[in-house]
Image (tube, rainbow, N blue to C red; front, top):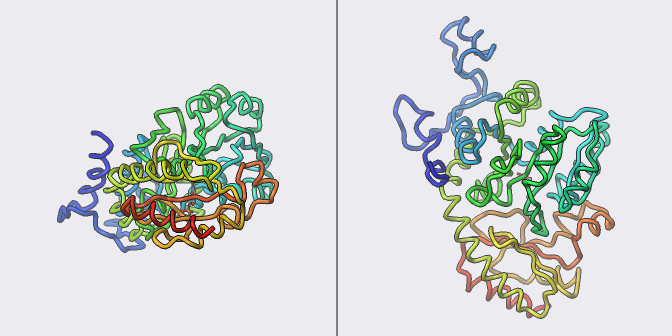
Length: 374
Ligand SMILES: Cc1ncc(COP(=O)(O)O)c(C=O)c1O
């Protein structure tokens, strides 16, 4: 099956064997009846497929997990209550005191906060090197290194990192690669095919697609994810609610058409920005709905532009049906010190836009009137 077919069909009928409803029902139950003590014992021992308790598994959540795994080409997926829950659970499962992680410096702000400020509380060492140069990644790996972590396109500069080159380094040194694919979900990019071990998603973004849920996912092989489930997931308890899983499944069905249309509109906005004398640089990898650009006059001008839009909404997040604008220096990346922001290339005049499904002419007209105000 091609990805657009999987995207509609996987997990659709299997969760309701009795009525065969076309849409997966929302199973609002915290616990499950055992037909006998013996069956209960088998379920606890993981020797029967029946469910035990909704912090572990739930049929609606399982339908979403099956679809996410199929879509990304993994054997298994675990849905979580947020993208950050997926990221921190993965770190806390694979890393212990004395271990190290090698990460690219430009990452989602929350991930930066955990890696560059919080990880030391747990005795985890973080080495941040430029992933544009795989030799630097290789040089940073030593026998304490357990994880290599990155995103591509990066947020908010939309740089492209060569995924295959990084996974080759990781395989050579037997280190697990964890990759946040939130910015380029299927069908844009399939990291597992490029050698990545674990794919992370913030489902809050493109996959949910309607800015109405917070969720995350961890996708990979059974060999890596079954122990993560048994030892960490069920005890940290970052579980997704069945209602959120239903919304995410509903959002997923239109992922491909949304991404296609948003890409077309983003390409037109990029063309407009490249011809705008008030813009010094436009960052866009050529696909997807997220773009960023630098305004020549810096912080105040960036602030003024973001305050002046009328169709585009001033809000963080991305991947929803409505276009959003944000100013990383004062919002998503404000937790970083000035030096960290400088090292990450996030200048004061940088603006990020997530293009939604509005008409392209309306969006460009909105930007034109906002630029006129600065
Ligand atoms: C690339 C990326 N990863 C992870 C996250 C965190 O996801 P959540 O907000 O669902 O916890 C975000 C949120 O903006 C993101 O942009």
